[in-house]
Image 1: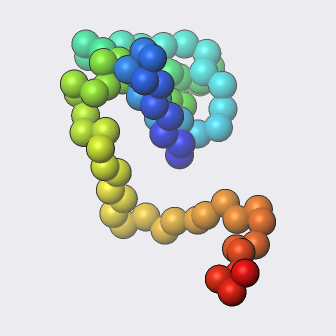
Image 2: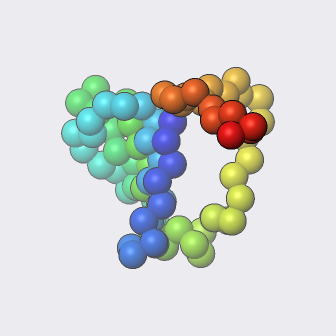
Length: 78
């Protein structure tokens, strides 16, 4: 899952799975769900996000996290 915030449009996009959307469904005012060809949700768009959700923090509970560690951490000793 990937969260992307676009301050120029005040839009938050939540990628649920890394697959292209084929159609959109508005589920509530300012909330749009992207679905693939089979109708499975692939993303959620929240318009006017700063007035809908608290963008100052992100909490994750009950999920095992993985980090993208393409390069090894730098030594603290320099």
